[in-house]
Every structure is written in structure tokens, then in C-alpha cells.
Length: 440
Image (cartoon, rainbow, N blue to C red; front, side, top):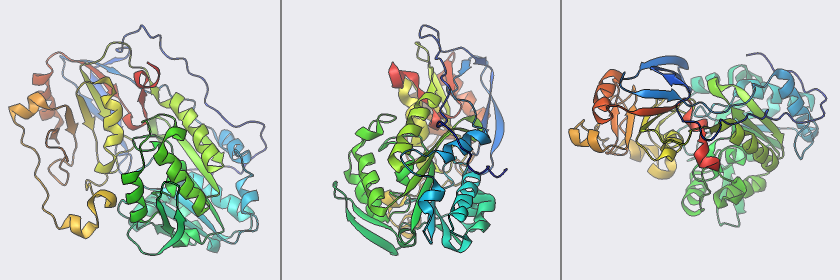
């Protein structure tokens, strides 16, 4: 991956080109397909795969509206004119140390290229390698291995003093007080000691906070598990894909990030193939809100006026582990019909520190077996799932899901339930908002 150029003078922030939606009276089945070719393994073995569909099905691909791919000059202009802030170089001048907060392997952010650009800016501000640390914001998920960190950061790994994979259970935290919503703010101490901090992340629809990304790199990204637990259990949720400014949970974590002292945020809008189609830089809240506006346009997906009988939802590119399943299930469920999820995990373990407690306690409990493929389950399941790790490390949390690691066998079963189905396919479901859920 080429190093992004240094910022150049510009007169405006890059924004997504307007994409006109399909006429509202057109049916969903605009792009018929008899086989499905999608990307899998966004978090590990990124590749294309082809799946044959039953000949009895009428299937159509429903991609997001998307936006033009950003070119190096677009990215440089965005860095040169941050929103509500001086440039990174200007803001970091005089600082002796810097913390770069990066989302973990469960997100599709182009971390290597963006980190290299930020490091160059910090160097120009006078902060050299020994003063720069990268923090992988795992939240309350497991820490990343060194190999995973290197894969995530590429060349940037060796251009900083230290790469720290955040451990939410570590007692090495700094206390900043409590938010107006009574969330205790305990944050990674090493990150808190930095003179300058900047986050980078992808924006995406989120059940609790309306949208992910931005200040979420502080809470839960580098927060203590007790902070994340209080926040997740006590703050009211916003609308999935709605206005983040109306989400109590979002506003609470943004207050926590301000208490921590997050200086700037880089927010990404990601298209098919994990390409960068939108980018904002600047004040954490302003950059996030503008990125959300871009993402709502890019992620909008026309589903027509006639509901399908079945929705196939591919979990790429947010298919890191089972804790991410909701990001696929929710958009797929917007049509109110049964869904089939395709997911190839990097890690099939469903552990999450907020909901399962310490890893040692979770690991000591016996794990359930895969639900038996009974006629009753086939007839009643609202969620079907193809997962290569099924029965080999992964078992769905819900016993009502019909899950298989053999695609042909799964299709043979499903065609019994859906003999002549109209099928809509969401190729990157976590980064799609069915238009009926946006402005029906």
C-alpha cells in the first residue's frame, strides 16, 4: 500500500458525489443472478467466493448506492483542511508524545495508510518515533496478538515506539470522573499520559449509539471494562442508523472522550472491497457527524417496493468474530422476512468482556453443541447461517438459528422451506441501510 502524500492546500472538504436513487415504483429485482459472488474474510483471509443458488430461486443483488473512490489527492485535501480544528501538524506542535487510537481487526478501516500519514504529520510537528504510540482499541473484546497487530498496521507497526493492544481488564487506568449520565470514566493510563491524541475508525450503523466510530475509540475502545459495562447497561440506545446526536449512549461516550482529552478524529466511510469512499478529519464530534452524513448516502440501498421472501446478507467486511453478527442481522431484518447470513470468522469465539465477564470464567464453562437440523427447526427458523466454522469452534447463541458449514447441504434444506423464493442479496450488509429503513 502506497504511502499517502503529505497534505496539500485545498479550498473544500471532499464530499460524496450525489447518487440518484432508483425510482420508487421499480421492483427490487433489478440485477438478477443465479450464483452469488461475494467477498469473505474481511478480517483475515480476504478473498472472493462463489455460491450457487437454487435454480428455483429468483435472486437479485442489492448493492449500496456507494460513492466515488477517494484518490490520494482527495485524502490529502481532507487532511489539509480539518473540520473545526487546525491540522494535525499544527495541533501537535509543542507536544512531546502522541497516542494514535486505531480500531481493531473487526473493522475495515485502512489503518496502515492512515497511520503512516498521521505519523508523518506528527514527525513534522516535532514528535519523533520514541514519542508515538499506537493503541489498538479492542474495547472489551480480546486483545490482539502481535501477528494480528502487524497485519493490521503494516509498515506503521515499526514506525512508532510501541504498539499496545488494549486490555479492558487491566487495572492500569487513569480516572477522569463521571459523565452527566453517571458513567465512570476510566481509560488506559498510557494513552491518557500522551500530550496529543487522535482516533481513526470507520463509521457504521450501530444499535446502541446510532453510529459507530469517532469518540467510540475512547469508550469502549480504550476504556476499562467497568466503564464499558456501566455505559452499555445504563445509557439509553439511539436509533440504528439514526441521528447520533439524539442517542443518549452516543452523547455519553462523546462526553467521556472529551474528558479524556481526545484532540482529533479521523472517520472513514467504506465501500465494497473495503475501499475508502469518504473521509473526514478534525474535531471528534464534527468529523463524526459529517462522516455519518456521507455514510448515510453511500450505505443507502434500494430495496424496491415489493418485499422479498428471503434476504441473503453477507457479513463482509465486519466478520471478525460472532460479537459482530448483529451488524449483519439488523440491516438484513429490515424487510421483515427470514434471512440467511454468510459469515467467515477470523475468530469464532463469541466472548465479550462486558457480557461474559473475565475470559477465564467464560473458558471454564462447557460450550453448547450445534442445534440439530430437525424438520421443526427448518420450518420455523427466522435466521439461517452459512459459516465455515460451524461445529468447529462456533455455535450460534440462539438455538432457533439453522446453521451449517456445508453450503450445498444448506441450500438443499432451504429450498424445501423456500421452493420458489424471491431473494434479495446484501453483499456488504454491515455497511448497508435498506432505503425503506431510511426514507420509506
